[in-house]
Image 1 (cartoon, rainbow, N blue to C red):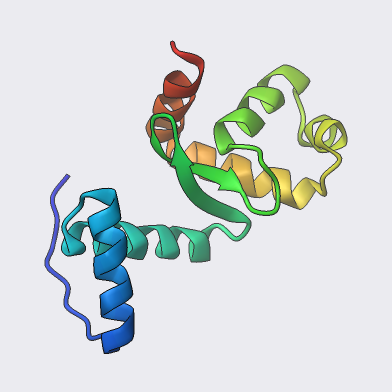
Image 2: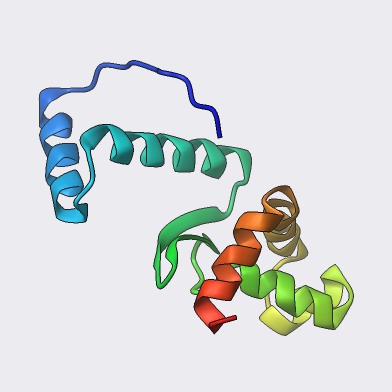
Length: 120
């Protein structure tokens, strides 16, 4: 995917923290900064969605729950409706809609996350 160069200034103490985290992950600071910026932008666009490390790399999940977005999409496929999915998960329908909106917008990413978790 094509990229663009962006620049920003951060406080020294946060730069040190970022460098420490990048080293721990064996990444360049610029790569980790890019990842964090992308994920934060997606979290703003899709309230209720967060990101975490998983078997296959970073994974979208539903904040406040241990459920990955790919799992919500799978449950929805079987349940057949947002209401039934929400009832099954005991969540408000709005949270299910948010997860499904993310899954639809990033279908290939979600498919890859699912495949890496279930070994497909």
